[in-house]
Length: 79
Length: 438
Image (cartoon, rainbow over all chains, first blue to last red; front, top):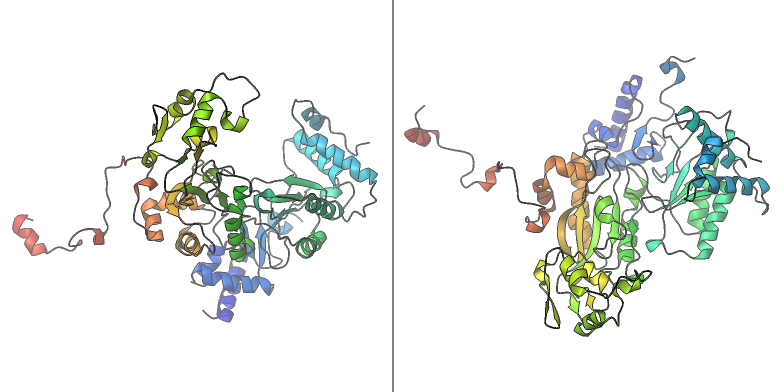
């Protein structure tokens, strides 16, 4: 899959799911672009370098998300 | 004078063991006095606030650390673990308290100059609190703020020629034993293999694409000083193919008392005269040793490399000459399914640089399989358990070997594959009906 096409697909899917989810496992991204993990890694890393995706880490697990997204105070019923 | 009162933490200092609370108090005082005149780049009272926060957690029985975060250095998805506190007004010193993991030197060989440099960076740009070393084996810097991360990374890489370690769903910082540098039992150069694989797999170390963590550990011999067999997803344990070398004169010297057993390690107490039958031969797990008159004999085919006889009589018994390593996979701690020890997947492989065979026929096929088939947060050992040893053997493209099997099978069912059955699963239904009515 071409980089541009893969990038658009990932951004579109992640944006669609934003209401319920803001962090995604690497495997979720590889599934979106239907690519083997090693090739998907190149695409995902390129997107991180360009600032389209960002890493999130709990320390033990790493995930990916669109920058600036995540659980906001309003989503938890707070002002 | 301490910034926060900590009666509950103070109790922890009353036991017989050294207490981290005392260490933290000492560090808090050191920062407050600042005799060296360091221009602290993060709050001076970071350690005071850490103690205060911990006291509050003890009092309330709940944590005040938030879970994870989006910190890191540019281009790296590991090595920095974001930690934020949910009471920043009460404890501003630990509002940001990120952890940094730094790759440790091979075999943990340090020079005092290098240790000073590490401490200088961390006193200036962090809390000064370290964990030497984390259970992964790396140097852990505890507590700094986001703006300091790139600065620390720059100084580590440019001035100390040192890199960050692994965290998250990455290859974790590989760890090795001291190996041939100081140990005569080492069957291969652990530090060279560890260094080589660390460089080779930089991308896996810094850019997370695995389902979960993955650890390499290197033990020079089956004594397993870094406990790779219990802790590493892939452990490399030195072994030999030929016979244990026996110096019969030295055996007699141990029996006669001229040489002290265990290299004198238990000499603090009088254990009586050395008894080779009781202390060595009788303890051999496979019973493969015998004294024939004055000659010690070993049936090497039965030896399982427990290392006990060599450890007790190192001058008399030495590792063989045809050396290499065994590779085990799937060890892990008990989050899911309980703890697991490594399973032997490669009984013997040569360990000569550039280690192409190890990389191309073992590590990479295993990774490809795990990356494709592993579920999110599934360790290699769990995948091996889920899909079975048969699948692992298929992935590696090797023949099954009795040494991979822990015990005879108890499951009476055998699931054959079509290509393993003569004639396959296809049958001529008309031919079948000639003998079996509908």
